[in-house]
Image (cartoon, rainbow, N blue to C red; front, top):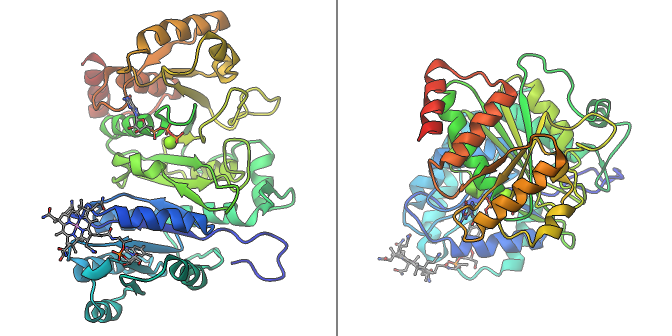
Length: 419
Ligand code: B12
Ligand SMILES: Nc1nc2c(ncn2[C@@H]2O[C@H](COP(=O)(O)OP(=O)(O)OP(=O)(O)O)[C@@H](O)[C@H]2O)c(=O)[nH]1
Ligand SMILES: [Mg+2]
């Protein structure tokens, strides 16, 4: 937490929660997640049936204060130890591991687990309010820069510092290094090593942005077996508690690959559709020189939104914008009102398995034709793997960004477009 003398509000505590592999008991952790957000924590929920390595990768990339596991399958003694050991082995042993499992974890088990590196266990019957108070007291800590962090953790910590140190009530401080770095261009300090292609993905809440991004990620991984992709997912903070459920990571099946860097950001009061630290986070990802492609997901946006500043006088935050909408947008009048349709480089009509998609395709293409910019509509069904519409969308992004595809990767991409 911030020092008492600091005028800044303290940055919310970030927690990663997950249910271990071979365990589908997710109702307990869902209850805990909601309660944590109600108490002002930012919760990144990874889902159930999660391997130790997936949990460790997510903890590193999200630079969380703590990992909370909910285990009911009886394997807790081995599993909690494995997570703690992998964190330690990878140089991230500063991230504590704790959790619960109701009556399946006995007092005797908990003593063994404590000796093996688990920080604490909550037993059946512990009141939620008691747990929340203890968690906030035990795991709140200021995120300081740490030269010992390497690789993804170093990138993740730089983003945490951008999030936590550059705010005054949710607005970038003009004198801060992060603000200087991101405001001088509105975007991008020159990358030191490799040029990344940055695509902003916006669209109404629930249109399928995260699912589509995940499917695009799978295309990237097949087309470029050696490159890396970064995903920056913005989700809203709750205005009452300041907490957030950062839920985009649950849809990110392909983030379980070391080529993918996935980071969730809460808006923390910013009303632009992005965290105020998103421009700095983009800069950090680019400057790392690690990523060929960076996809930035905005929160679900409305008719007037321009999260990536594509209409402003200053430089855009991204190299290209993808607008995603679903067939149930209302009617023609609503389509006319959506400002981003005037300027998006790419437009996807997702959920084309929906009965209304046929009419929607015609209406949206007509709307785009009126812009006279040659914008092409990409019909997609992201919920389906191997959807040819997603293949075509990925091919369009790869072409626009001149993405480096390996020889085998190009073939994989073309095969998918034909299928
Ligand atoms: C609900 C439930 C189910 C539901 C799950 C629904 C869901 N989506 O989660 C259903 C009916 C589907 C189910 C199925 C099964 N279940 Co079941 N299930 C339970 C039950 C009744 C409650 C668990 C629960 O959600 N508790 C609610 C939480 C909030 O309270 P709590 O457990 O007391 O936890 C406290 C703390 O530990 C803490 N906590 C818990 N997790 C975390 C995490 C964090 C981060 C923190 C901070 C705190 C915390 O919060 C609570 C505070 O008071 C338990 C029995 C029991 N009474 O515990 C069996 C139980 C866990 N199930 C059991 C079994 C065997 C199964 C099945 C294998 C049955 C079968 N043969 O098909 C399947 C497996 C399903 C799967 N895919 O994994 C056994 C496990 C035995 C074991 N491990 O040795 C139990 C113990 C029942 C029993 N006595 O046999 N189950
Ligand atoms: N039927 C159908 N459902 C889809 C499709 N794409 C996504 N979904 C579902 O739509 C729901 C929302 O998808 P997300 O990818 O989370 O949507 P989002 O736009 O990222 O949502 P926010 O981040 O909350 O704005 C999920 O239940 C998806 O499984 C699709 O093509 N067809
Ligand atoms: Mg999403």
